[in-house]
Image (cartoon, rainbow, N blue to C red; front, top):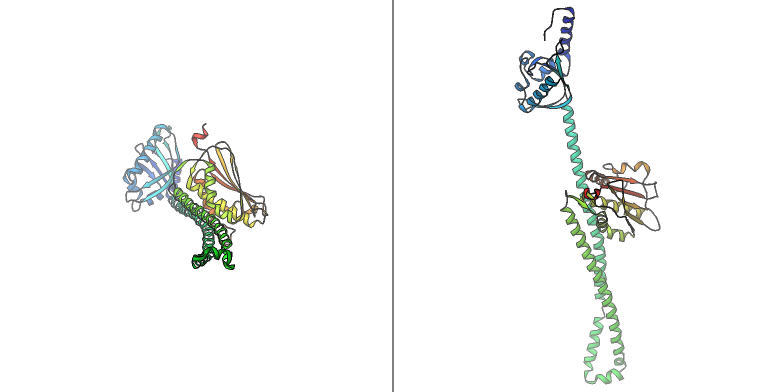
Length: 422
């Protein structure tokens, strides 16, 4: 860079010198071979013990790893060839001693008085601290997402245990009835009749027709037969209920095991099957709380999603709807499950209740981490469900006209590609 001894030239030199001495960002000028010909004091300071004179005439290859120096060199040579500037590029600087820093760089062509390109110049703003904060925030976000996912899995597991617990209550009732029936059996009376008949075996005909007690034996045996028949029918009914409840528990556990093995698998799924599976996971609790279920399933194409995540969401929504309906004070507690087409390429899975409703100010807050209106709640369920929906390129929203007017939760999922193109 030639500078003539004129007042303007001296002023220019003074301005450049002051600028390079005080500018906080790193400023540099390079020749056609990408060697430093001038630089700011702030850039020299980043090189530790080196001074400006130690850096002049050298290139990035003398200070950085090739992983950073080569792309920087290529960018500068492209600017020299084309004259096109490079603005706002985020660069990772890997220093020779292993340090890593991040800068936001802009580079332009350096021209002489004849507008000929004689090199490049640029400015780099250190954003290492911002990148570190961004990385820390991303790590925290991932940890929160993982915690939410685990919480969501816990919601499903809790739902399974709760439902199994309700079935076990029915099992306990059946076993109590069976045990009580066996204890109250008239089998001892039948043994006494048998003993009486053996005692009068030599004169059995006369005993049964002439003896006052003997005359009662045929009628008593007939009464015992009716009693045994009634007991048998009642106990068989309880055993049948017992078997159905055991099968129900096996079905719930098998379903949970199936979904547990499908974590992370994205596939085309039938919305009606997903709704029915989630409903089965809650069926015993719904019966116990006397909550009626209405199905309104419209024909829709398969959705693309993860079975385990959809189950997590729907189990949580149905369970919440059960609690809301139970606390709503309506004469008939009701949950309506709907499947309807959404916007183009979308399907809506809806869980509606006629329960306590949601105040307008809580319609968005209910999806926040830790927010709950239940005295024993932890605020993970809806938060993890909303996260799971987003991970499947879906959404989960809530609608309610206010307290006492019920609520509707809508899971919006994308249609499977093969179905969407039909």
